[in-house]
Image (cartoon, rainbow over all chains, first blue to last red; front, top):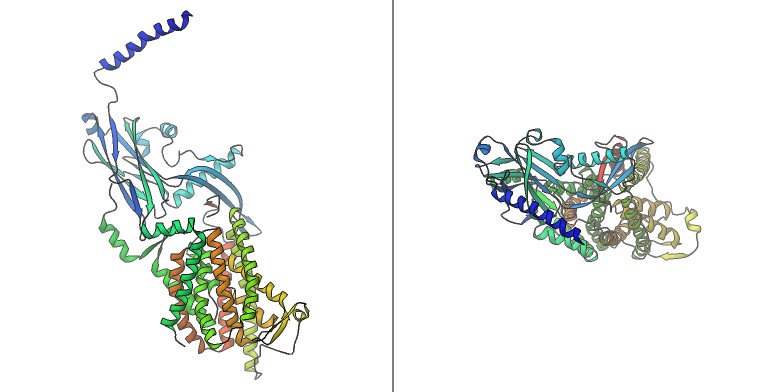
Length: 265
Length: 323
C-alpha cells in the first residue's frame, strides 16, 4: 500500500515548512496574552447584602506600547452565573383579568450575566463578531426546550427573557467599567445584583486589538451564602420537615414570650 | 479582586437596615417588616383575628413571591394565634373537643391544599388563584360583615338589644347524622359539618396563608350555633395546630417557609397584638365589626385592582418548579 506513505511524505515537508516559518517569524502578529486574577475564589453573601461591586484585576502581556498608547486595545470582562432552566410566561387579558396564558421553557439560561467594557460596543468590534462569540447579554445563546416551536413565538419569548433579566438587574453592563491603570494593567468593575444567584460563576476576559478578537482568559468564582443564611437555606432544602418543626417551635415560643412581655390585659 | 469599598457600603446601611432572606433570596428592609408585623398585630389584637389575611397580601404587595408569602404567612399565624389561644386557655373559653374535631378536618384540608398549591405553582397559575381566592373570600366576608354590623348599629340606635345567637332556632345542619356531644359548647351536632368546616379552613390555610378565623368565627356562630364566649378561643386553638401542620407540610414539600421573614413578622405581630387588644376594648362590638369589614373590603379591592390593571410587564420568569 504505497499511498499512505506517499501522503505522509508529501505532508511532512509542508509541516516542517510551517513550523519553520513560525519559528523564524520575528514577530507573531498577535503575541499579546491576557490574564485575570481573583484574590479569592469565593464571595460570601451576608445578611445585609444589597448588591455590590466586584473588582477584577487583569494584565495584558506582550502588548505593543505604541498600540497601547493609541488605545487600540479593548477588554471585555464578563461574569456569568450558573445556568438553570427558566420558564418564561406571558400574560394576556381573559375576561378583563390578566392571566398567564402561554409559556416557553428555556434550558441552561445563565442566571446572571454582567459585563464591563472599555468602550461602547460599536467602537470595539463588529456586531457579527460579538454574535459569533455569544458575547453580551443580547448574544448569549438561549436554547428553548421545544425547538420545533413557532420561530416568531420563540423569538418573542427569547427577547422577553433578556428584557426581564435586564429589568431585574441580573443582566447588566457597564460601559467604561474596564479601565487601564497602566499600559499592561487593567481593572474591571462588575455589578453583583442584590438577587445574584448563588453557585459557581465564571469570569472571562476578552482581549480585542484594532477591532479583532485575540485572546481570552477565564477564572472561576463561587458565590455562597455566608454563615447563618447558608445554613438556613440548606436546612430548608435538605431537612424540610425538621426545618418546618423548628419554624413552628419558634412561632409558638415567640407567641408565648410575646404574651409574657407585652401583655396588656 | 476586592469587595466594595467599606465607606460606600456603610453610608447605605444607615438609610436602609437591610436583611437578607435566606429562602426568598432577596434583601428587604428590616424596619418595614417589623412595622408591617406590628401594624397587622395591632389590628388583629383589636379585632380578635389572626391577621394572616392581611399579612399575606401585604407581603405580596412588598414583592415577596406569593408562594413564600403564603407559606410564611401560615407560620406567622401560629405565633399570633398561640398568644391569643393562651389567653383563652387561662379564661377557660376553649372547647377542646370541638377544636380537635375541627382540627382533624383541618389536617385533611391542609394536605389537599398543599397538593393543589404545588400543582398550581408548576403550571404558573398560583399567583392568580391566590389573588382570586382572596378577592372572592374577603369581598364576601367583608360585605356580609359590613351589612350585619350596620344593621346591628341601626337596631341599637332604635332601642332593640343586639343579639347574635338565637338558641331555639335550628337549621339543616342539625338534622345531619353522626351526632356528637360537645359539653363546653352545650351542643349536640353531627360531626360532618364540623369536619367539613375544619377541612375548608385547613385548605384555605395552606393556599392563602391565613388562619381562617374570619371564616371560622362566623361559621361557628351562625352555622353550628356555638356560644359566642367559646367561639374565638376554640377557633384560635384549632388555628394554632392547623397553622403548625400547614407550615410543616409546606416546608417539607415546597421549601417555601422563610424563617427569618416569619420571625420578623411574629416579633412585630405579638407586640402589636397586645396593644391592639387593649385598644379594641374601648370600641363597641358593632363598630369594631364595621371597621374590620371596611378593612377586609379594602384589601379585597386592592387585590382585585391588581388583577385588572395591566401589569408592568406581561412576561415573567420562573423556574420550572414555580419559584
